[in-house]
Amino acid sequence: AHAQENKQGIHSGKPKAVTKASDASENATRARSFISHWQRSGRIPCVVEHASAGSRLRLYIPKENVKLTFVLGGVRCPRAPRKDGADGEPLGADALAYTTRHAMQRNVEVEFEGIDKSGGFIGSVWLSKDVNLAEGLLEQGLASVHGMSADQSQHANLLYAAECNAKTEKRGMWAEFNADEEARKADEKAKQEQERLASTKADQLKPRIEFLDVMVSELVSPMSMFIQIAKQSKVAELETMMADLAVSQMPKPADFAPKVGQLVSACYTVGDEWHRAKILKVLPGSEYLVSYIDFGNSETLAIDRLRPLSSKFASTEAHAQEAQLAFLNLPNDGFVSDYAAETYAQLRQLVEGRQLVANVEARPSNAPIQITLYDPALGRPVLEKSVNGEIAFAGYAVADKRALSSLHNSSALAQIESLVDEARNAHRGMWEYGDATADE
Image (tube, rainbow, N blue to C red; front, side, top):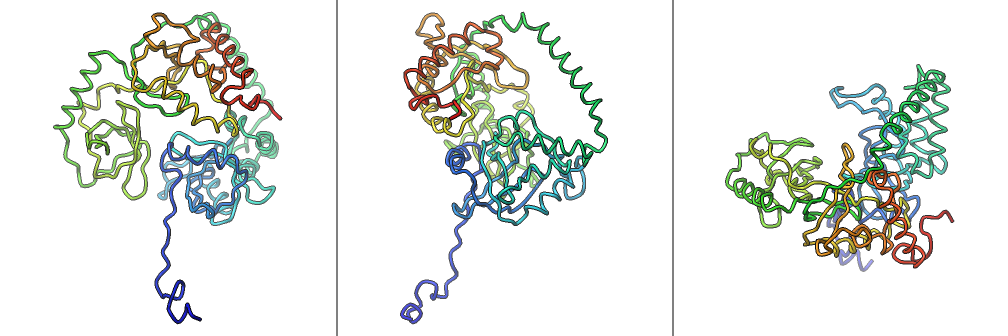
């Protein structure tokens, strides 16, 4: 009664302030700050706000007042058509309708498995205790299993079984499925793969020697980075181009709305300098996630900080090249991911602000180059003293036997495995409580 009389709190008559939900998928860096906590939390209650495709959702977590983009792990749905009906794949509209009917504006539970390059989260959506959304899409023949992603999921058997049922019942995309013909094609493909591996085995076992003087311009993750060639001619070329870019800005058309993948001129928020950038994602409110192609870093910018890029600047090759540490990987495990920040800090100490020598161990097609980084003060390359060796010795990585660099250089792989074993036995880094990758 006293509060009512004095018009306090909810009795004041003032509208209640609405706290705007933060966007956990704003970019990959922001997404990484959430993923470890959510992976450890198991199933998390969410509300499905929107579905843009059968396997792509927009979720809201009320408890944390956070919104995010979520992709179903282990499956691929046909692309849904636009509002005008264009650009859709067969059954794309049906897959979207199924997800909309069963999940839109409903309370669900989600399990987080990882993130993608643009900050989207990957995992499973549970419509109820035992009803999995991805399983339902597969059962209806409105999605197919994405092998590489599904094999990393704890629900892999569930997904494969659902797809098998759809094939047996000839539902959706499997309406014309012929098991015998598919088996014949699989055998033929396996035979061709064996022949290809046999014919290239000798080349795969040859270590590559391609030394480059480099600077690490951006650390993306504990295993991934962008490098610049540290030649005086390259540095001078970049400085000249940036000076020209600063005084050669094209006017911004009134209808300027760059698309994903387009090169633009972007004004970096630190120093207000113009750089070449690529559009990674179009965001609400005329904002864009961009990547600076000559340095590798990324940020979100408003449209008024972007301009069209002249063709004379767009034709020049990017000065930053994406790379990853050869022979190494981080275990795909929620517990081990807790050490990602420590790995990142260790790597920064070894590479930040230093000129290094990189040996390009492998150049996979459509993937980052795989490198070993050395301190030039060593005089000669010694793998155990390389950045790669230091990370393995400190207990922050495991040997990646399937990496192309490992296939090229089995001797180097064996040395890395020895360093990993030594770190495990000494309980360093992620091995401090024992074998973090073992099933317990």
